Image 1 (cartoon, one colour):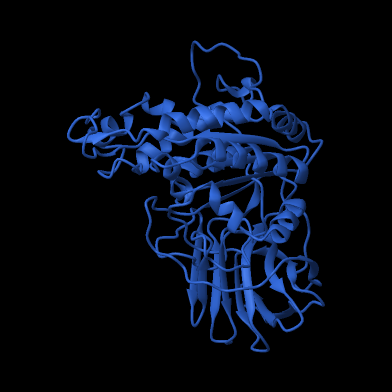
Image 2: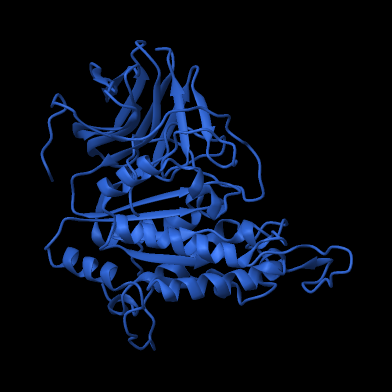
Length: 432
């Protein structure tokens, strides 16, 4: 384990961005659930899969688009590197940790826990990251990047909390383990204030976010075997937190997953490019997973040609920012809605599959192939069209009655399928 000094000097790293504020929306089609907050820097999401031993499984070649990720896993196992970073961006299906928790649990058990990046504070009411206790009290203002009119700054978490008063406090505690470093991402500028950071209730460190130009400030605080960190404004100016991370200092995988309820691919365009570029450059992800598509698929007016161009542009940008990262595109899970006038209730009980869902998956698959990215159709775990209806009617049910969101067991089943798809063939048959 890397040694760290709790009283060590923090390190700051400014980068370009802009400041703003906006209200946090509370409801939308896809319901996420992420809770707590951590000083987290943008982190990349790595998908390593390991499934239960299968008595009659054959080896398969490495999946197209995942070669760099699989090579990184091999280097980690061989001791040639200490960490792998994975970044997963998406909608409400990953806002809770039921699906992503399957991946994170397997990777940390198999390869080690290197830490995790999280949204700042407690950005929405049902936020509850597995393995962490998060608290946010006092006059914080939370903002979401979901709506097109949202004002920045926003980074890869898609959320921001800001405050001026020293009465505003937010904390995060790692359950069942310790961390050796805290990473804090905040907006800096000529008039921004200072943070008071306390580890395990010790005397607070005062860290300034002030910078000559408005932009991202990254603060790293050594925290030898700490379990809890609390942040509050010092009272000398506004602070705006974009994320935080708890780093263990041990070899393993860091998997950062950020889900925004109701999000489509468009949400990425609401983030500040300078902030995002700086976050990804710092994170150096080995795998980036894009999990959008459910909300788009319910939009009958979706322009598929425009969507293809937008997705292609984003993948190209990610490759430019992190040329050694693998990119994975996830086709959306199955969904259903009440049939409109003139529509056939193809899924029974008055429910039908939105007509754009299948066409959207075809577009995603085509764009991924052109960009040498990996594509995985999550709806396959539900046996295709109207699978969501079967899952909702199952005993016990695997999906909620809205025919969009998965219950805990359904989300875990989807997570296990994704894990198998992302892992190299040497892990496919339970080999560790």
